[in-house]
Amino acid sequence: MLSASMHCCTGNCFPLLIQQHINGSNVFNRSWAEYKMGFNDSNGNFWLGNELLHQLTTSRKYKLRFDLLYSSNSYWYLAEYSTFEVTSEASEYLVNVGGYRGLVGDAFSDNNAAKFTTYDSDNDNDATQNCAVRNGGGFWWKNCTYWNVNTPRGSNTYFGWRINVRNHIPLQTSRMWLTC
Image 1: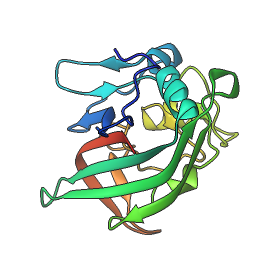
Image 2: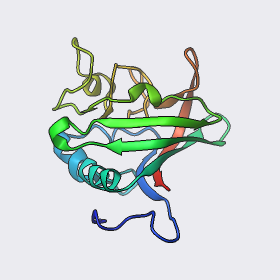
Image 3: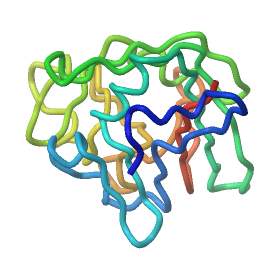
């Protein structure tokens, strides 16, 4: 595990993998404590940890890059955000994100200023339900949209990326990277 004093953006810049979700499995249906510390499994699914994300992104400016493998044509798509910061646990790991560029659609900017929600810590803007319970994975939920890179593929959820208001692409794999 990396320490907060190890930055990917010093000297030669190397991207730092912070999330990988393979095959739309339900491995991301985890508790607040697990998302705080990070987790992985033997299939390559991975979350760096919200506490380390907070420490890294508040001590230095990072970009956030999504690599998205479209399940229908096996093409990789890129979405990048020039601003990415995760606040402290005291503020429910609120995310500040903006400055989209890419060719796949801006799905994440709508989540700007969203607090992190898990099945056991409901911090989303939906007063009627917990979005992580409804969708099966922790994330920065503002509203209970049915696309997400941490939800499982299934009848009530959508492991995918919104490309515009009406269209989504189903994913085979998603990766999130801190970049410089």
